[in-house]
Figure (cartoon, helix red, strand yellow):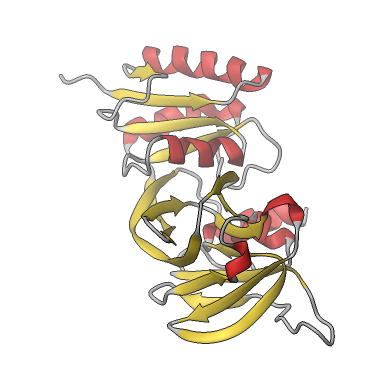
Length: 268
């Protein structure tokens, strides 16, 4: 019988370390081979922490198609569906195959500088803003059509899965996660006689390209924040964003619907 490897990625807080130790023990007793070394031969990745731990784990695994599931030792835990008290029930359900795989769409961002082109993925969102919290001026295009000249703190593009995070805090729409769309949300848009910017989100079909083009004076002072990680590019010219063909596979063992989960996380 081949070795059944399960990756475990945890954050460093006390509750997560305690839960990880307990999880490793239970997995070994169930006949699995848990590892914290992130093996590409694993059949499953388990993250321990909050939603931030889940997103970091996905990025660390380079958006692997290995199924991923989260144990919630954080606060909200929208991605992290398993409680530390339910490890035995989870392991039993997993051994029986009593779960489903829920593909989650990713953002693909193509970044053009004067000399090079870069490509990044994001689970939740990509933010374009100026360094040092200054106002930024961006030309916004959707499907090659100019939509607006935006002025404000920045512009966010989020996935449907990411719509319950930072995007929601900015007033963005909540989007059912199976919809293959992107949410374009302005960050503190300026509305006065000098500048006119849309102050509402735009829901964009995922196959269309959103282009954000900073004015020339911002080519060396623009930041990209990709799932919370900041990147600066010299001589930045344009960022193209759309839904990527690549997806991640979130393992789901709960029979709680999306709507019940939404209600329990935000309303109760």
